[in-house]
Image (tube, rainbow, N blue to C red; front, side, top):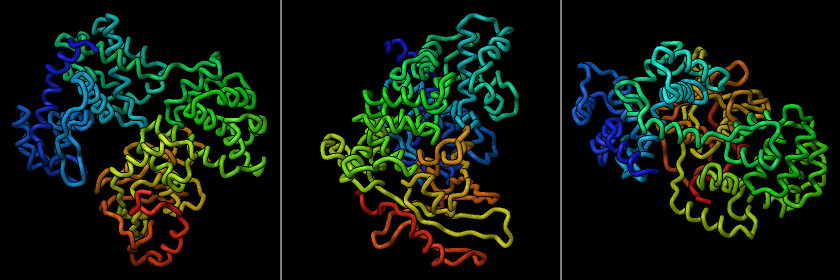
Length: 498
């Protein structure tokens, strides 16, 4: 990155306001249950930012000139929003990276589609069109052409509040506010740098002509559900069993994260590709994965203890590569702790032990309300914050029925029933969805809808078992009856790092 880009980012008014807000937050400012400033503090922060606000403010989130710097500061890591207060954090990035993280956070917040990409897709298309030189009069046509056929093109209409089908003016305003466009709506060096950065992090295109090994390299960094959608392009014109055989053969010579990507894709085809799994039993590195998959279909020789430890190690290495050491830690902990790893995984053990010494495990007190019932039916569930939504579904009595969650506009479901555009509920943890008290999600099982609200974040009690029901409405079943069923949900105790 050039010094010039960093200097331009430092001089950008949007980043200056973001830093000013972080400075105002300082050692701590109280926040509402939704993680925004209290209305009473709006005049004070407005003065610090040099902006004007109306006399009556219902929520700080309604004041764009304050909320955007707030979102940008949190996205850039300049503030950390906790349960009851926000505190400032020292910057850990170059000014240009802080600027880009802030812009990315604002565009995510301005997007209402499940992937949170609508505002980003529109702004990127606007910058691309203007960088190629069309006059503003031709901009609408150029942007529509760029968005045509894009996976995120349909999400544009729901961005920037969803009041307009094509919110071009809103996109121009935010790009100008962040200095990506100048006063004449021309692309600045900072805007061109953002385009280059966005292009660099986009997944490389997947086509049927790729070799299997090349495909694995492109799928490895992606979340499992995104990797599946990309892989389907490669399978065009191939019989699933033939494509599966090619991927499993390439996985034999791949890295652990690439091998896991191959396994997840091939598993998505179900029993249609069982012959490919049988062939893979003759491979050295893929054999444990093939044996585990065939075991699910009541076929094959089963897994030895050493092979099970090999699987845990490979999936932990993949989780660390894709999502970081925290996800690897929770994955290994969910499977019994460090003893579940191969003896040879000494470096991974060391890294996970170091993380365990720094982690604080918590439990959430959730209020589960069955919507539309009279009299009201509700119960309280205390469950570790680190469980996946898949485990939460089990605790919420999904009983193997088709179900899904909705949180912040994103749907999560069990891949057993087919994901479609949903995210995998086993790939996201409760703490990543309900980030503070007051946040909520919806849970649908059959025709019944539940509201799940985080009421409190607590320290676990070593003397209690989790998950546990603590109270119920008069119309619901008893606490003891619920806890009897919850006893079947096996999870590590949150009071112990391992």
